[in-house]
Length: 205
Image 1 (tube, rainbow, N blue to C red):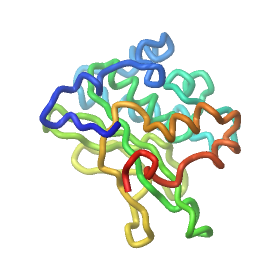
Image 2 (cartoon, rainbow, N blue to C red; image 1 turned 180 degrees about the vertical axis):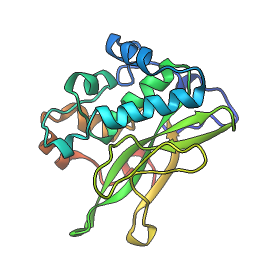
Image 3 (cartoon, one colour; image 1 turned 60 degrees about the vertical axis):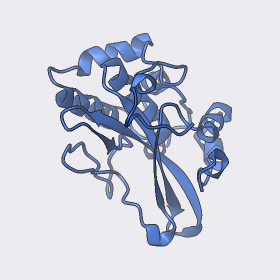
Image 4 (cartoon, helix red, strand yellow; image 1 turned 90 degrees about the horizontal axis):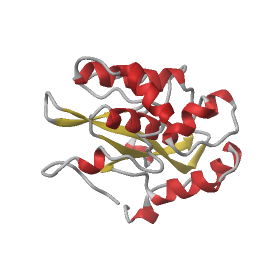
């Protein structure tokens, strides 16, 4: 499902679900920790906590595959998609609309023919009345993402000349091909072989 809240309500971008499980006790505990006096302060605290406290599974060499927001808390790590589910859950539980977004990236510069999806978030900035993308993937040498309400500072800058792409749609729930791959993979290694290369299955070219 591709959807946008511009010109409409925000209900689906505030909703709890099986994967974006805002109502899970572990998520609620994290919400109590990051909630601040203003929306921007809360977004920053939530974003930096998810980015820094829960490393990317690949960076750790971890094998457990998390799907839901609470899975990331339970495992202590997650891949980009799962971490975006956690950030969405925390922000929604704080009353801040949050969506899921995707990029198509080269899997590796050593394998230029292979692409992969990458998951990140869009958050509604009420003060400026607009959506703003953030990437909680987790930083490492060569990646320096942060929350700056004035401009996007993402983990990956898309190189369109190499076939990479920003998908500008905002999703209330993970796209089916990503959710299916996460749910049916027992290890990160297995997941790596199942993740889609793009959103063609979802009707996006």
